[in-house]
Image (cartoon, rainbow, N blue to C red; front, side, top):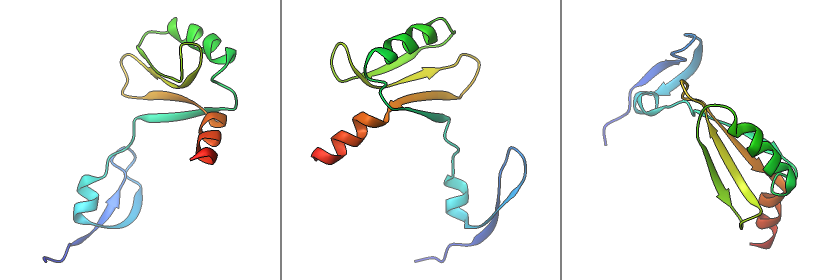
Length: 100
């Protein structure tokens, strides 16, 4: 197996040095365009109000439903930007983790 060369890794947006990385890791690194927004009880009525407000902003909304009335999460895509906001309910993930 060929030894992987080590290189100086830096942020391509602000040129700040992040550290030493393998060349293949440095080339494969990607910034995530998703910003998580965590709510305690998003799956109930509060989620409906938030989706209604976000619908007035340009961009699509993807919904991950639990059923017709409750949502596990939803993602707001902003037009003219690669950034996405993913709204998740911490309570739903917490309870599902305990039951598995």
